[in-house]
Structure formats: structure tokens, C-alpha cells
Amino acid sequence: MATPLDGIKVLDLTRVLAGPYATMLLSDLGAEVIKIEHPNGGDESRNFGPFKNGFSLYFMSVNRGKRSITLNLKTERGQAIFKRLVKQSDVVVENFRPGTMKKLGLDYDALTAEHPSLIYAACSGFGQTGPYAQQGAYDMIIQGMGGIISITGEPDGPPVRVGTSISDITAALFTTIGILSALHHRHHTGKGQLVDVAMLDSLVAVLENAVVRYFATGEVPQPLGSRHPAITPFEAFASADGHVIIAIGNDTLWAKFCEHVNRQELISDARFSTNADRTANHSELFPILAEVMCQRTTDEWIDALGKIGVPCGPINAMDRVVAHPQVQAREMITQVVHNITGPVEVPGAPIKLSETPSRVDVPAPSLGEHTMEVLTGVLKMHPDEVERLSQEGII
Picture 1: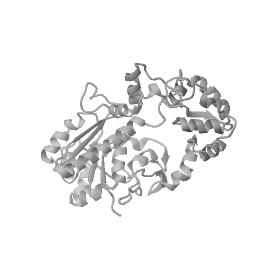
Picture 2 (picture 1 turned 45 degrees about the vertical axis):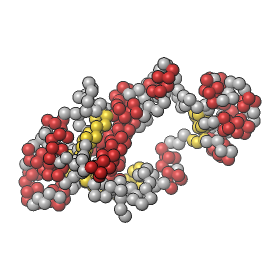
Picture 3 (picture 1 turned 135 degrees about the vertical axis):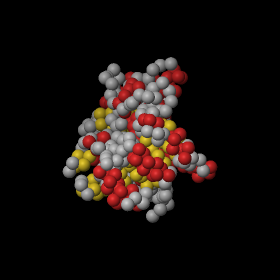
Picture 4 (picture 1 turned 90 degrees about the horizontal axis):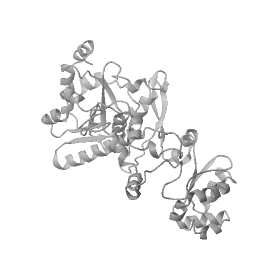
């Protein structure tokens, strides 16, 4: 079956998370992705746990569907081979510190001088411009600098990291969007372009209403635990056996909830009659609702409130997430089979396309697994020449 990016060829120079996640999405959408790794160890995330039969499942989780070749770009011969691959490619993706590719003579200007239709995507901590451009960055650093930690956690509590590498993942998503936009532009004009995405920019872009709240009120947003800053009640409460989340986004739902729990007097209470009132008086409302919500189990609340149309849900641990019938029905947990690890469960593709569906059926490659295949098949090198390159440490 056809895929949306059939025929698109991507050279992937990325490592660890943000870049590999972006190129994995392109692979899921049908692009042919050739991951270029240094012969000595390759992508450093190959050394990150957990492991199965000695193979990194961290690496597996963000490099599925790709082919791996080894190539030493610090050698003239390695650079020459890379340029030959560029000639037959649509997209180059890298997440080195700005200036690294320029030192090798393989930066955007150098490559597009010969291949003006090339799309060159650079995903870095701070982008290609600005006073911090040359600094390296990791997700935790960007979470702090980008402010998301300052609004995460319980009030007056210590700093809390968001539980996933959110600045890496958002940068990956914006990099993918940028590449797809550039491909669309090239389709109409024939011209490639530079896609410059920064982790810090990406995190600032998804701060939702924290930025506008600051400018509107002059007050610096603070951590609020599980509650929403502008909608009330919209948070987690202790139930009789755990926790349950209720999300009451308008006054009609509020009235339904109050009637259901036999607290009709709260509907006309001036402190709680509108969402704005409830939010302003959250400290008074919360203990009232906490006393109500602890009287039933989580499943009882979900069943009861679901019947009257009040949005609610559990806080699932990972074992319940992966087994959830909706997650299973949407094929969001799938399996790939690697010759070292055997079967491995990985997240499925969240983009559901009716005519050109995504694919998640090929595992991540072993280091250099496809070097011979690519160099002899794509570049038409003789196997003896490839063997000499290996002996010389170029591949």
C-alpha cells in the first residue's frame, strides 16, 4: 500500500532523541531514511538502557524503520561518499551544534550550492542564530530555561521535570512539520531551503497560555499541581481507592455535576456560579469537592459521571495505558521483530491517514547493518571497494 512520503529519501545524521524522533516520523510516513553513524560506536543512544539481549531499546524506540550505514565524515573519502549520497537525496537532517557541519564543509551553504533543491534540516538546542547558538543543550536544561519546570509540580514544592523529554519531542515535531512544509514548497518551486528548529524555541511555543497570562496580568505563573489555571474544577481528586480527574469546562456541566452529587446549592453560590468565579475561589471550592470525590472509587465515578456527560478519567500507570482498549483499538502499541532482540513492543503511529497509512513494521537497525547494501546498491560501488573502505576505517 502506498505511503504519503513514497519516494522521499532522507539522510539522517542525527543522534539521541530530537533528531532521531523526527526522522522516525518521516520513516513512519514512508520516507526512505538512511541513518549515517560514526564507525566507532555510532549514535550514543545505542548505549542507553533498557537493553534486550545487549541491544538498546531506547535506540529501538526512536530509530525504527531506518537503514544504518557507518561513515567517518572527518575523512575526505567519507565526505566524498556523503556528497554522492546527498546527490540522490531530498532531505538532510542533523542535530549537531551549529558550526560542526561547516567545519566539515558539509553545511547548508556548501551542499545547496551544488544541490539547490535539497532540504537541509538542522535541529539544535538554541538554533542557528542568537547569542546562545553555539551552546549545547539537553532536554532538562531546556525545560529549565524554557520555563516549563517553573509551572510544573505542586505549589511551593521543589522543581519537577516533566515526565517525558518534552523539549526534545516538541523540537522533533516542529522539525518534521518544517521538513514537510519545505517539501510542499519545493513541489511548487523546485527550491529547497534550510529548516532551522531550536529546542528552546519549540518549548516556548508550547507554553500554551502561560505566556499570555503573564503579559495580561503581570503575574508570573506558578506551579498549580494538577489543576488548570483558567478552568475549574479541572484537576485530579483523591477517590476512595486512588485518584480521578474531572474536567468541567462550562457552567452547564457544572450544574449537571452538582445535581448528580446532590450539592445543588453550589450552583447558585455566588462564589462558584461561573467558571471565572470558581477559578477565583478555587481554594474554597477544592475542599468541598475533595470531600465529595473521596466517597466513591475511581471506577464508580467514571461510570456515574460518564452517564451524565461530565468528562472524567483515571490516572493510569503504564501497565494500564498499554492495555487500554482504546489504545489497543487505535493500534498505538505495536510490535517489531529484530534479529537480536526478537519481538519488541513500541508505540504505534498516531497519524491515521485513510488512503496512505503510516507504517510501523521494521525495527531499528544494528550499527552499519546496511552499509554494504547502500554503497553497492545506491552508489554502485564494487564490494571489494567497500571492503577496502572498511579496512581503512572510513566505514
